[in-house]
Image (tube, rainbow, N blue to C red; front, side, top):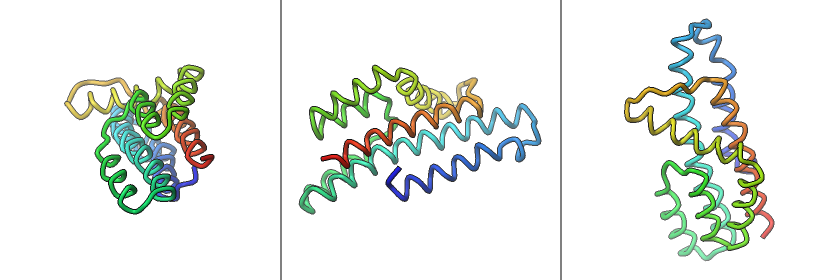
Length: 158
């Protein structure tokens, strides 16, 4: 990823995922709680990633008032499933939306990863049971990063 702030957040999440067994002393119940915690962190990362990536693009390519407006609108995005990523891409450029839609169609695991993180985060936030595990969060997180890098590439190639 090109964004320093997103890289910092990603490194922190990777560290926590890798250190989970050490922190939990392989206690399965604690690992379950850590899985939920990490899921919430990854969901927050995705919220930050969608706004940070497009805000950066707008800041580099638009006048200050347009960039300011764009920033205010993008920071309101919460719980973005894959469809929200596509909708946002379409708002910037039709071809970006089409390309991202095709990307998710050709990589259903990545779309599923983003949607699963958001669905599980919603369940966790509302006190419902979820079977999310640390290993599943790791898998979803890695897939999600691929999507963010794809979007960064689109924004950088304009």
